[in-house]
Image (cartoon, rainbow, N blue to C red; front, side):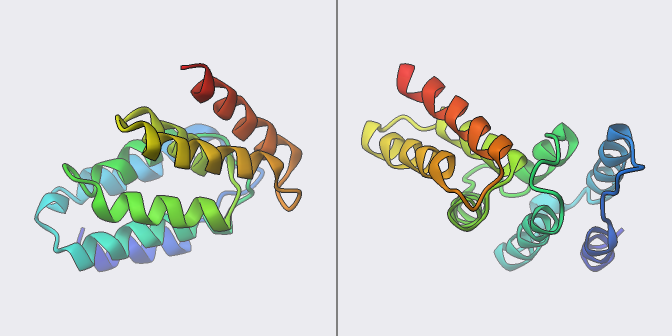
Length: 152
């Protein structure tokens, strides 16, 4: 599968109430398995794919449960420096509140070493937890991660 086909499939994939969790995992496993050359992508191609995946999250219910096939796939695209992924993740979390993006933000924070940088992104978790535009569940998840991070 080439990048254009993968992006088209992702754009056309929507989770519905009749769908089982494993079906979501299988979808992203297949995409990840077939895009074997992601490490050879240009920065522009990686950005395009990462943006498409965040657009997928934006189209879904904000309370869509975490899907680790999706999570591992999106985190893998921009290895080893994660510059593109990190920028898109932070942008997404300042504009959107979803269960999956909040988990991705928490995982990102877990990898940070510098205290000032950690504080900045821990504060973003707090901001999500206080944003009344987000669902109660999304805010509760963000608060839980926030409390976990400040206790570290």
